Length: 189
Image (cartoon, rainbow, N blue to C red; front, top):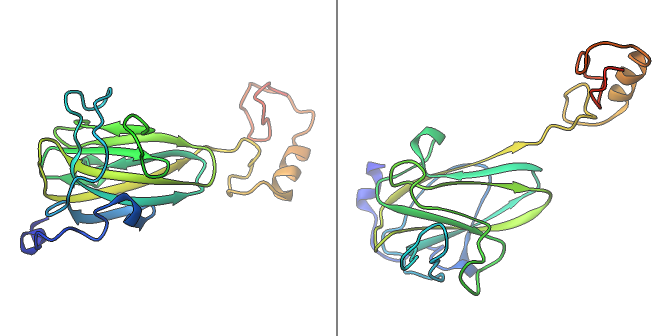
């Protein structure tokens, strides 16, 4: 993160929600230095007090992954923040406080991390800022852990004829629940 020492203090391109930069799963380096505060205070359960997420930077995440989406600034997940960072996730730009679907302040030290369920194609707005005017360099990590499909017997990520043939080949067999992937309802038959 030492490369951020030469950044200017001009507002970053994704300083406002309606100008959010587009991201996908992966790791992203950016800085909140020079950013303005563009979203509502969030005095709810995540941040308490004034609930300010100051000097915020916005991102637009579109995902069709059905599963658990994680946005993290924690070192263990590949991300990091060298200041007291805050994170909130919304569907669309927030018009009022307490419309976020996930938020975090100090999940790992002073860095936030959130996880939320995604059930189909959705566009989220990710807001990263600081507590009490804090700002600095950030490495954000975004992942999605898909929910396994029990009908995908072959485990190739598709439900197709290969899966049907595996179920047909095991048809009528009995054993302990879960003894074969073809036992899609785990009843032992």
